[in-house]
Image (cartoon, rainbow, N blue to C red; front, side, top):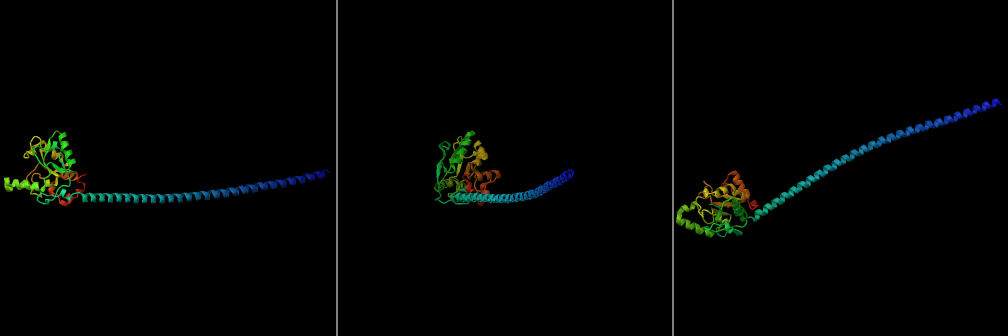
Length: 292
């Protein structure tokens, strides 16, 4: 009996060993599977990471291309806008030149000629408070009047009394005036009076100044504070001295001023130039902005 019990016990131990071996094998296999899966997972993660990195790089590359394309297109649009502005400006300039009287900036004194039919497009009468009682012909080109009014008002604000003595004269009026001067002064009249058709006054942009105190006397105007003020400030309003000392056309006329527009007047003032010394083609380049 005892022998049988021992034998049975041995078989039990053997069975248990077998079961234990099987369980251990299961554990080992399970570990193997886990390790295998972890390896594959690591490989997948690595591959996934590489894929994400590659995708990132592609996205960044595409973003760079897109940004470059957008920048290029924006530049094209900017260039087109600039071209459009230039074209619009050029068209505007051409329109202004086409609709502005080209005679307004011509050099008339014994050079260009205005015929008897030339009359300014529209004339405005100078405010009576700025007229000299001893003068006549108090009209100026309407486009010039706002500049002249500003000049006269500013001079008045500075304590001066500039007055207009004579402004627009027609071809006929200039003809009569010149004939009277020739009778009185003979050929000497040519030193201070233009023939009809050659007078800046016919344009309606020139005028002779005097002062309230001088009662219309022109001689000696250069000694007045008003003349000094005009020399310093006339260009700011578009006016220039037509016949300074030493000019080749007429004697020095400190009272005779002509409107040529602010841009050209400023250029002449800054460069210390005389209008009649400039080339006519250069003068004409200022025509489009004469009333700006």
